[in-house]
Length: 435
Image (tube, rainbow, N blue to C red; front, side, top):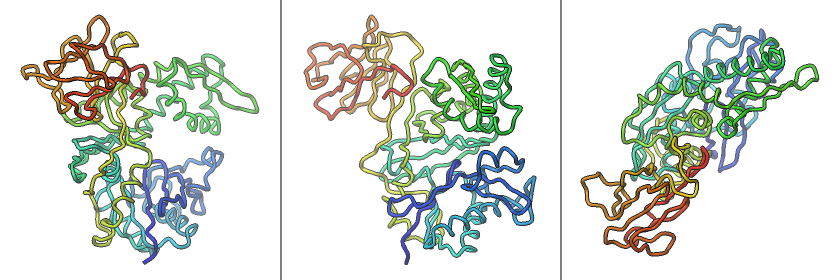
């Protein structure tokens, strides 16, 4: 048997890994021309700007529906995947045994198409792995999670449970809520700002429009941390600049994403990958959530590779063993009320955060928040703008120092209750990526 190659499919690109090394990466973009098209890595911004036959989601939405601009060689998205995968296979001459990581929402029909395409290219598929299961297998502490994957034309909501194993509990595909709508709305707003401030319309020229769209992810990311965006575009060897209020971008994103909140189940920790998190940072929604590390999918597959390839060929794998060293990080977006920056605003046990308030929050010795009627071992509450922890006849230490009666907390304080190993950390929210 040849060495196993891992082909990771996501909404942005297709990457091939072997023994932890990146062998090939190409964006999930195709521009079709009369002779069959340029696929992915061969596409330039100028080529895209001069063509009306641009497709971006043919792997993640693979099907056999006729394209709006078919060619003699490429009739549907399955043909596009075939040509793209053929190009990849030609670049990697010893690509034989492969494991795919795939989005949670792919259907049996779509997996069958991908299997058939692979067989036609003489690739032996050893398994399809649910990408969210792989990511949480490497990164998540025990608990119940909901992963929101904001894709170009849809959002996928996936529920997973993490214990000794990570188990896929179900996925819901929400159409018409995706990154394309957000980016296009932001592009129109930014273009209008250019028109008002410079009388230049970046959308009147296809190449300039492409440059604007290429810059959008960076500008959206920056809107989370800056009051204003300083946008610049090159046109005819001239740099044209406009200033856009970040609050306007945030309103656009929040308007597009707010319908997702009502679809979330109570008691589940919300988790995001990096691409989705760009929008979350700038929306003001989902204030407390987990961040999935960048390489969690690949690491989760590598950790479980032996068990993956032991199964039947082309098996769809939605259960994997979980890691004993979870690495997901908590993010708390800015709180809406004013508070002294020297005082803790939240307490977290590593999986979820609790916002402090004047109402006492009871804690037990195992690091859980108690209901009001339960007898607590410790109590935390805000007093005069400062967070204070009180002992209820049990040993509490903050940063290794025993608390006598009470102690004022600051961001970053490590709180130990009854000598347990760090059940809580007090944090101060000062920006949208505090943790």
